[in-house]
Every structure is written in structure tokens, then in C-alpha cells.
Image (cartoon, rainbow, N blue to C red):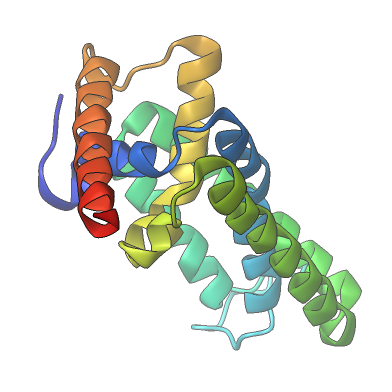
Length: 197
């Protein structure tokens, strides 16, 4: 069933698709988007707890801090966009939070921030190369920051589901999205043509 407004998956996925139509750029994003999310959680592990957590007799380094809050926001948003693929994406967010917490606790802040910085620089550079060299279009974050940061992990997962399993959130989803992507690309080409003339 199609939704509207902030939860309009069709609209958001078409916007994303208009910026990611080149297969190599899509592959680059598929490989690099989730590590950006994961390493952000590693860094956020070192923020203070939002509330005191009960002591359960074991310590795996899980702290209910801004890393947890970020993972929870992403997870809830993905489930609200599409309960099937969104539930898997939410589970991945939870695994990322747990894994990032364990890794951050073991590395300690003095090493963790260096690992995070190196990973973020590498992954972001890869994505900018994907856009500049292969897509030949500026990244979506220049036009829609929320879409680029909040929705990108879900969209690369949804794209993999569609490519590998032919998954659709509802019947006719991909047909409608392809039509919207075509319209957006046509509009972009026309604007580009006007700027050049």
C-alpha cells in the first residue's frame, strides 16, 4: 500500500534512484553505505548514557547513549517505511549498534576515533568517486541531506532485495518508481542542457 508525506517510499526511492542509476555507482554505495552507519555508531559509543541502564550481571559494552538513539531512530523509521524489508533493516541497525559497541569498547577512544576517521574518509571518497566518475552527477546529499543520511542504508538494502529476489513492498512499486526515476532524470537533463546553452 502506497504512503504519503515523509513515509512515501515510492517518492523517496525514486529520488534516490535518480541519483544512482549507474551500476558501478550502485555497487559502490551498496558496499560503503552500511560501513558509514556502523563506524558512526562506533564513534557515538563514547557519548554519555541517556539514562542509567540496569546492571544485568554481565557487561558487553552496551550503553544506551546517542549511538543507541541513532540506531533506534533509523530502525523505527525503516519499519514504518516498509514492515517487511524495514524489519530486516531494523535488525541490521540493532546488530550494527551491538557490534559497534563491542568494537568501540575493545579499541578504546584513542584508537577508535582513528579507525572511524579512516573508514569514513575511505567510504565517503569512494561514494564521491562513484558519483563523479561513473554517475556523472553530484550526490543526493547536496539536494536532500535527510534522504542521503537517514534513508540511504535502507535504500541500498531495498535495492539488493529488488535485484536479487525481485522484492516489491507492494505490487506495482517498481513500475511506478521506474516511471518517476525516468521523469526525474529527464527533468535533470533538461536543466543541465539549459545551463550549458
